[in-house]
Image 1: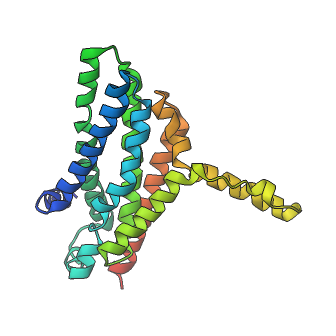
Image 2 (image 1 turned 90 degrees about the vertical axis):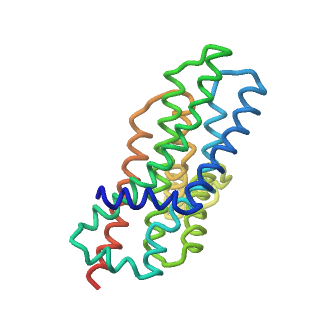
Length: 245
């Protein structure tokens, strides 16, 4: 796994992908910090976290689109799959490499905390919780991107499909549908309740809200960690099937 991690991590910076990801994230985060915190002269980072989490929707598909799709297209995945390496190690190596790049992006914005500290008295515990939530959300999105990339040999399809899924998860909390009221009848009302529950469950912002407020709850942490593990298991399953074809 270490060899795969090193190879994948280096590959991000041997190509423009790593630099594009970091530059896009840091540029957008800087704009949000200037407009939200410096513009309003506040040390509260609630709205900063809410806004920069949105950029993950657009940049993480760039980060993950090539993880498996590129190797599948160039047929180099056959060399990897026939090597004496467990599929779990392959998936985790690629996952941790993408997560490391994500971590660099998130850590780079902690410079803003030093700026706030020089002009005010930020609550560091709340900021730490906010960053934890931001990182967990990003890692969850990375796991989705890896899974989608394992299903196709086209980087474009991988990026677009990942973007579509993450976009839906991020904006589903803004959907104005109330299926319970829209559906009548005994069976239909049960279906409406189930759909409303599903939309609420999938809404990322509902889970991320506590982190932005500096509240560390077990439920949203478990939500992100468990779903990340689920998508990694699905990715392992896809690669495992391809290995024995």
